[in-house]
View 1 (cartoon, rainbow, N blue to C red):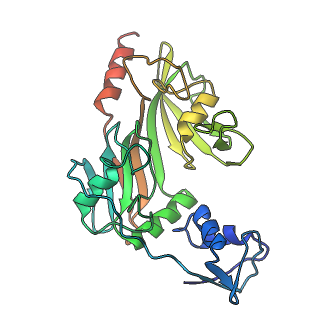
View 2 (cartoon, one colour):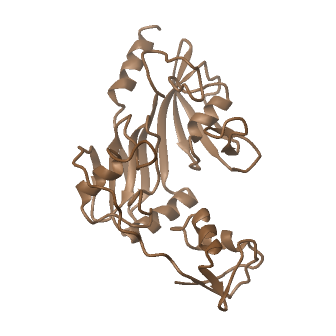
View 3 (tube, one colour):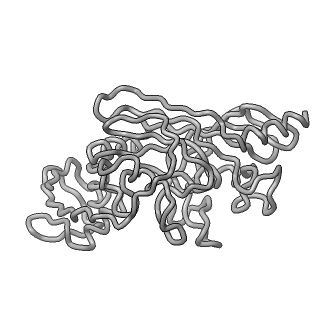
Length: 301
């Protein structure tokens, strides 16, 4: 593919990622390192600067045939058409295969449900996946059925027009009725398996929140993601000394209220349909485990 640059002085990897939203910046950097991005026949370097009007040649690798197996796993489908599918993922289901979770994932289930109609942009291990939610987080996730839809949805993720709203229960009494947490997130310098609010090798992260209800020792919150960093809501709320109830990674080390994982649910998705431009809103009810915690908390009032 060819790409015409539109600005002067921008790092090439950043410019390409901005102009090609279907490619993450890390993917662009990998392509550059593999000499698959050229200017006038010469491989470029990622820290070279852009010049408006110049044309780059980008050689995209062929999408590999996935070795993953389609598995007949029941899906709670909340919206579906020829371009996208929105699924209400249960707590405990992994989104895509990784070390320790080679199958039984949402991707395996989508491959069975959708057949051959899943985008390949996500790569061999996560066809169709536009964004992700943690294994122990329940709720809505969107997948693309073709590369056109994937690119359009990826662009919406980038410009924040794909809105993701969550509900959670946190420890402690959140004093403000609403607010914004604007703090960069990167790998924890103390534990590489965790994320943390840090200035080192981090990316900007913004979470908006509002209080739904307060209970003795706990607060029910609604959170809206402006950015989508790994574990963002969990890290931000823990940083504010209000870790999510049941989150033994970023919060209290012992389970509470009968939970074995965080009380966090992706409740609503709003996006512009990739083909028609129509505003689509998909929401789902709170799952049983979440409602049970609320019943217990209301009984304490």
